[in-house]
Length: 147
Image 1: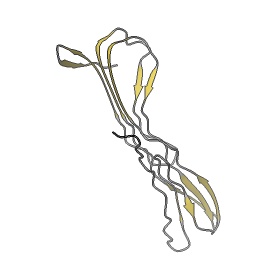
Image 2 (image 1 turned 60 degrees about the vertical axis):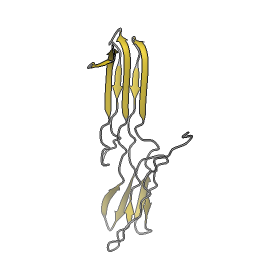
Image 3 (image 1 turned 135 degrees about the horizontal axis):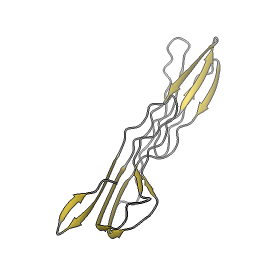
Image 4 (image 1 turned 120 degrees about the horizontal axis):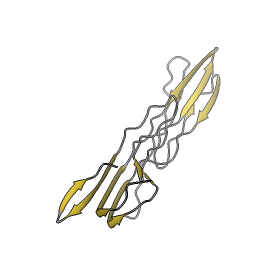
C-alpha cells in the first residue's frame, strides 16, 4: 500500500560562466529553491509547491457543480542585476495532471468546469498541459462527453 509519494522540484545549481551564477528552482513537491552567487544584486522568487495530480471519479450521476482543477505550479526565478544589466534565470513549471470522470449519467453540464493546465508565471517556462476525460459508462461502453 502506498502511503506517501513525492514529486521533487529541482533545486537550482548555478553554473558560473564568467561572473554569472544564478538560476531559478523548479516546481514540485516540495518546490526547488533558487540560488545565486554573491555578485550584483538579486531577487529570488521561489518555485511553488505542487504539480498536477491524478483524479479518478466513478459515480452514478453528475449534476451541477463548480470547478475541478488539477493544475501545475509555476517555477521560480532569480532576477540578477550586475554591471547595469538585469537578467532573469528561470526554473521549470510543473505540468497539469489528469482528471478522469466516469458516470452512469450526466444530468446537467452547466457550471461544470475542469482544467489540467500547466503551471505558468511570466518569464518562466510553462509546464505541459494535462488531460481531462469525462464520459458516461452504459452497458460497459464508455462514451466521451465534451464539457
